[in-house]
Amino acid sequence: MSRVTGISMQEWLDHVSSPAPMLKGMAVTSPNDNIMSPANAAGVGNYVQMAQQNSSSGSAPKSVFEGMQTIANLSRVKAGYNPLDPEGKGSKANFLQFSQYLADLPALSLLNSSTKEVHQQEQNADKIIDSFVAAFEGIAQENVAAITSAVSNLAKAALSYSKKEQKYSNFAQNLLQVNSTGDVQFHLYSSVFQISQTESKGTITYKSDYSVLVAVYELAASEWGQISGIFNKQEKTSINDWLNNMKTPVKGAGGARALCLYPQLGGRR
Image (cartoon, rainbow, N blue to C red; front, top):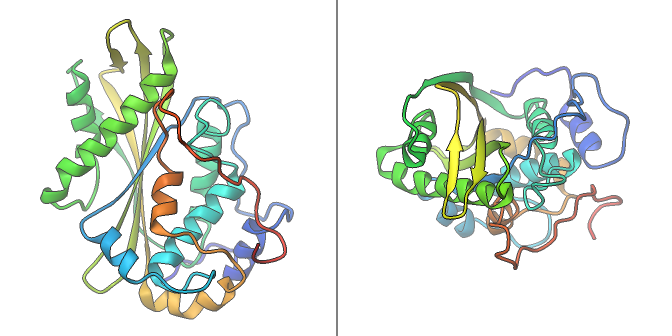
C-alpha cells in the first residue's frame, strides 16, 4: 500500500523533473556537509536477470523494474547527487537530499526505516566491512558473499580518494531485489567511516560504536500499474545504467562516463 506523505504522486514527479519551487516535506540538506559519499549498487538474487528480461521498447519506463530504477534516478538527478564525483557532487549532503526525495514519494511503501547500532572492537578492514553488511535487512544468505564483495569495492573507491589524509566517508550501498510476487524492493544503507591511504595499503578507522542508517522501500507491481501513465514523458533508466551511475570508480581507473545532473525539461530528449 502506498504511503500518505502530504505530496501527491503528480506533485512529486513535477518537482523532480523540473526546476519547480521546493515542496513542503522535501527538505533541503545542510550545504556544509561536505563529507564525500561514494556509492555502490547491486542487484540481489535474480533481480538483474529479471529486469533485463522485462525491459520494454520505447523510451518511457513500462515494467515495474524500469519504474523503480527511473524513480531512483529522477531523485538522484534532482538532488544533484553524482557518485562518480565523490570530491564534488558526490557529497553526503547530496546523498541525503537524494534519500529525502525517495522518502517523499507516496507510491513507495516503507518496509523498514531504522538505525542499526554496531558495536565493533576489530580494527581489521575486512571485518569492518563484514559488520557493515551484517546490518543489512532481508538479504538471503546465498547473496551475502556478493554483497560483501560489492561493499569491498565501495571501500576501495573511497580509499583511493583519501590519499594520505584522514577523511570521513559516508559509505552508501543500494540494493535492488524482487520478491516472489513481482514487487521491487530498494534497499539503502549508509554509514560514516574515517579512512586514510598509506604507502602500501588503505586504512579504515572508526569509533568502537557506529551507526548504519537503513531504509527499505517497495514499489508494488500493482501500484506501478496505476501510476506508470504519468511517467510516459520520462526517459527510462535501465538496470545497467542504474548500476553504472551508482558505482563510484576507483580514482585513476578511468573510463567512467559523465552523468547528466540536470532534470530533463520538456519531455524526452
